Image 1 (cartoon, rainbow, N blue to C red):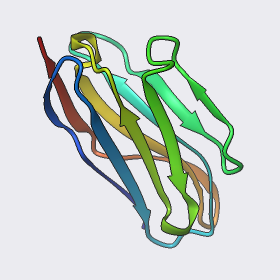
Image 2 (cartoon, rainbow, N blue to C red; image 1 turned 90 degrees about the horizontal axis):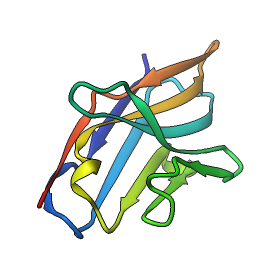
Image 3 (cartoon, helix red, strand yellow; image 1 turned 90 degrees about the vertical axis):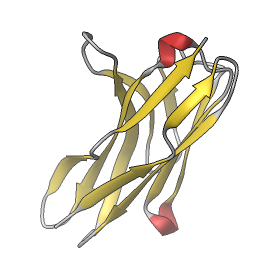
Length: 118
């Protein structure tokens, strides 16, 4: 059984910073791409940032230059450092990871709320 547990969400004023963490646990053989998605009220879930097992990253245009994704492979953990937060960043943030146990499959975290106030 694989679990992804997120932490670090909360309420912050515009211009502030937050750091999200997502730790994978269970019978893990390897982890490929890890990423963060978000879903604002009334909107579809969208990719925020992703990082490959080799460290290659990609970002949504809306967060480039403000957010940084990183990972610690020894801890099976992915991070999202969010700076210069804007009210439009308010959403539920979900961690996603491609994890190989017996098979390669995609797993999602339960989500963590990020609220940016003006």
